[in-house]
Image (cartoon, rainbow, N blue to C red; front, top):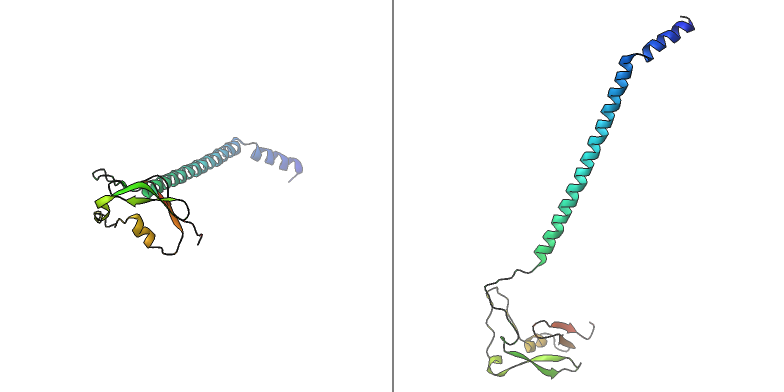
Length: 147
């Protein structure tokens, strides 16, 4: 075959409308595939973010103590304790039992948690420096010796 015949044959094959249509179809198919892949990736990212958000909210909600609205709040005065200053060795004050209510043991709550007074709490840790810090009803128990 002569070179001119080869060129003519190549021009016929490469210049054909069918080949141009095949190129267009192939390009459209590749673009559609890439768009579908991007949509799946975006949907997966959104779903992962939603699951993480729901898990975070679940952890926050689960971490909150359940509150029973039908029970009366326990305050230091309802347990027979007042904010009378009884200085400790560290200068912090403790709640002091008041009158006859201090001799009566507190009623155990229905949840099975036993309430103890300040003296019983301090008796649990003999030989340690400790204090109750804060306003009555919102006190924190703190060890001062750093052990």
